[in-house]
Amino acid sequence: MTFEELGLLPELLKAVADAGYSEPTPIQAQAIPVVLDGKDVMGGAQTGTGKTAGFVLPLLQRLARHASTSPSPARHPVRALILTPTRELAMQVHESVQTYGKYIPLRDLVVYGGVDIKPQTEALRRGVEIVVATPGRLLDHVQQKSVNFNSVEVLVLDEADRMLDMGFIPDIKRILAMLPKERQSLLFSATFSEEIKKLADTMLKAPVLIEVARRNAVTETVTHRMHPVDQDNKRQLLAHLLKTSSLKQVLVFVGTKFGASRLAHYLEKQGIEATAIHGDKSQQQRTEALDDFKSGKARVLVATDVAARGLDIDDLPHVINFELPHVPEDYVHRIGRTGRAGKEGDATSLVCAEERGKLAEIEKLIKRPIEQVVVPGFEPGSDFSGPVEKRRGRGGRTEKGEDRSEKSEKSSSPRREPRSRERDDAGRERREPRRVEPAKAKLPKLDFDPSKPYESRGSSTDTAATETKRSHHRPKRPVPALLGGLPKAEPEK
Ligand code: AMP
Image (cartoon, rainbow, N blue to C red):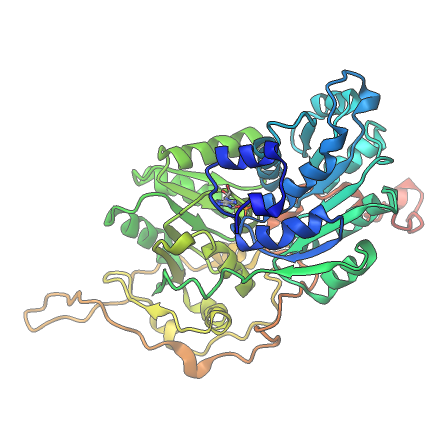
């Protein structure tokens, strides 16, 4: 199959050739003809499969008839809306629109929060055919009346499952209600939970289902390994692993925004060039961090799941999970950027006693045991062989919205020395690596079916997830009596 055979315009073929693509990926081969045909699509594909070109190329082709060099805003109404859950993904999709559309004079714009709204407002007023947006900021523009959806012909919802996780579905529904009924809609999601199917029912008409294999456990070129270690020794072990290896471009995952900054700072102090990326950083800081990492200026990028989602880093060979993710599917997302296109990659996890339940869930999901290797000098304490704590839910948050891993760090006991080591006849410490038997016999009973797609239970896995949530989602606080008593509960707008 070639791009020519898909019936793309010469302008698009030229752009694709410029990008260096020789043939369509499976999702592109399947999606492009269907989208060109004007049909709705429910696409099951993750980032890294080439799905962006799968919808951007045919979308550009369908809108090409509107291309105009007229300066009049009236000649450039919004024709296509692409919604993404994060700023990073919005930027990347926008970059793709520009890359593939460079020979077609359609106007495009990306709008996301955390940056000055004025330049976006001005660009919208000048007229733009393709808008890539995060939902919150788009609604701000709706409120300001700087955008009009009357001429929207195509809607794309990218990473719908992540939108759901991040609590954006009410915003999406608000936007859907403003769009013309006659339109083409495309929904992409890595997983199809009941909630996603419900959303698809409300926004798609007779959709064509397109699915490409999930790039999870089937990526045979990724080596999985875990190092059992005490929570208190994790930072030292990470520094040790980085110092004693020549690993370049290491993506380190942590559970919280605070943890990301703190860990990057610690590594810097240890002489390891590191940078952090998370939701509290300004857009410019995030872009700089990513550029430093891509250029090799920073050897290590410490990231939260949400911030790392959709990062366009090709062929990343090493992923280290400083903390295991709260939901096992995120392990698959995290390692999804290693071992691409048959290249070798490795995923290393630092696992403390409390995380063994999560480890068991991950092993079950990826259908293989993860090799356990004890690093000499970092042997875990005796609690590692104790009973596995049963996990109550899959949300990973305490009632206060605090991340559990963060909490456990805060409440952890004063630094403990690594467990005393065995000594040889001469009294020297024995330092050979020792295998620890996987704690399989004590696997917790799972309260979900890991072979089924992940269904959110209403809590996000990352505090960064709430970063762009709009204030009207927050529950109203009771007002003290001195203001005249408690106000009446207001219905959600
Ligand atoms: P995506 O899944 O859309 O984020 O794409 C992942 C990466 O694949 C991006 O860096 C694209 O530039 C690249 N890509 C997309 N389509 C192709 C193709 N047909 N051949 C080679 N690389 C591609």
